[in-house]
Image (cartoon, rainbow, N blue to C red; front, side, top):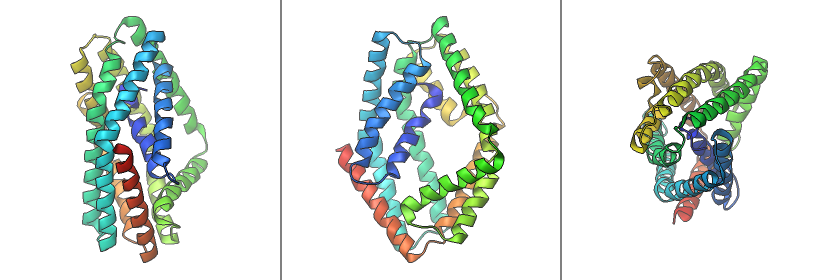
Length: 285
């Protein structure tokens, strides 16, 4: 998994933990994360037995760093949001502030994790290894594109259902008005995947070209950070506007749901957030 364009999967796996249920859910997902990250690394990279052992070691170190450094940040964020819910302060200003905090956390995650990625990738700059990585990326890109062949109405229905489920794990059942807000967002963002796939293909091409130059570990770490969080500075400058548009639509979704929570939904959300925060701090310690 430790490729520049796959670091976000760690965040996705951890988000799954946040919306999971039951005690020790985060600990359980950490076990899944280690397995999933190792599987993806071995799927993308040309590894011998020693290389696999090294990747496993780096994934373990990455997750240890994440537990110590990132979980407390997530917990502070969740407790802060629970405080805002308890105060009844979920207006647009509070949501804008929360989104800024979310983006700062994502930046900290990528910044810290990029050095572990570089530790692995510095051993994959030889022509044969770069070619292998390029072929694997192209194969996965083709698989992802096949998903877009599904009828748009089916994609939209599945997207709405997924977003509603994610909200309801925090708030309990959504109201019809809130589901309308989700549906508006899902419909407006349905074409984002196609744009993202095109941009990802460009980033992958630039990334493998960069590795072929046999950069240093420090150069790889800096490149990984930039190509994940600021790809417009490396390729396709116009994508910055696309990315910011996605964040704005996400904020509108939060406005439509979070500013209309009932007292019961607020209570459920506060309790859920504090429960996740407590579990994160327990695991971090």
